[in-house]
Image (cartoon, rainbow, N blue to C red):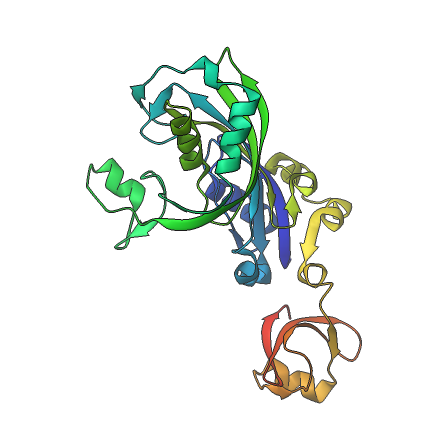
Length: 292
């Protein structure tokens, strides 16, 4: 079983828990891209078997989230998991559609963001949240992120919450974005809910829950519908057919001369069976991800 399975992570599960459970079910090497915190839900792509080697093609994907920011309170983690460390009055005059949409327009584009201290980013070999838990001071590395689009979905004046949808680059922390939105509304806030609805081309509509996977573990039609093979993932890439002699050289790591455009190619044997992926650079074809 080599390829990609798009899961819909439910609240309360860690990303690593989902990986472990799917590994038990499929008995295949399993990994994931784009960690989601336990409180968050939504799209969590899993890589199975030789599909784990596809991570280099997926880690730069942008993402789309739906989030709710709770105004008036700030937590030490930036979400519901933390302790409230500050409270501040919310100016209800600022909680109107026109004002918030203007605020969102100001958030568009490239910008420098400081990730939350409670994150898994490593500094000097140690994760930031480890520094936080030990009350150790550390300089948090800033990063450039980009907000492509951010749209208002709902304002709840009673609960002092704002729901929004954001399309952003890899590495964007929505917890930090929620705090920024609160600051621009002259108050404090934290991320109350987070649902990731898209990672690159992988959408929530094509995802399956852990419960559905367990229920359908022996259902071939389920896997045929939801499992993305390596061949299917690269279906739009050009095809190369190798005869028995050249295929043997290729599989042994020999780079073959091919005067074709540089890029990724699907490799097949003479019987039209899919072998894997090769890359052409400087007129040389070399092996990349092989499934046999």
